[in-house]
Length: 114
Image 1 (cartoon, rainbow, N blue to C red):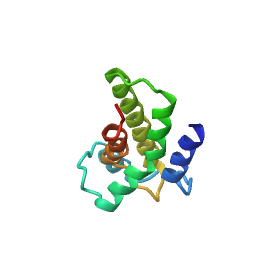
Image 2 (cartoon, rainbow, N blue to C red):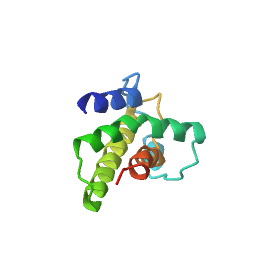
Image 3 (tube, rainbow, N blue to C red):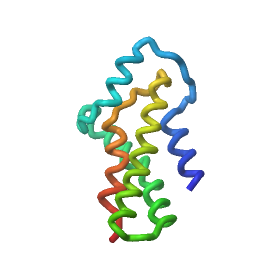
Image 4 (cartoon, helix red, strand yellow):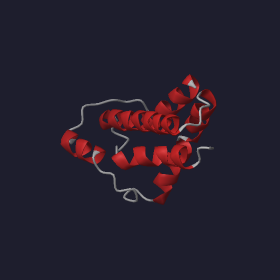
C-alpha cells in the first residue's frame, strides 16, 4: 500500500520541483474548481487510472463491506487525492484542480464490490 501511495505522489508531482509561484491566488481558485470536464476527457481518464491501484489496495486491506466502510474508504481516497492537488500548487509543471480529486475517487466509488 505504501508503495502505491508513493507511486501516485511521484507521478502527480514529477519532476519534484517546488517553487513559490506568482499566481498563488489563481492556483487556490483552481482547487475550488470542481467542473469535471474542464480539463478534458484524457485528463479525466488519466486521473481515474492513476488511482485504480490505490482503490484495489484499499479494498484488499480493508475487507469490510458495510456502507460506513465504503464511505470511509471513499473519503480517505478523496482526502489523499485532494492533498496531492494542494501540493501541486507549488509545482510549476502541474495545474491543480479540485475536479482531479473527484476523478481520482470515481473508480473507488463506482467499482467497489459489495
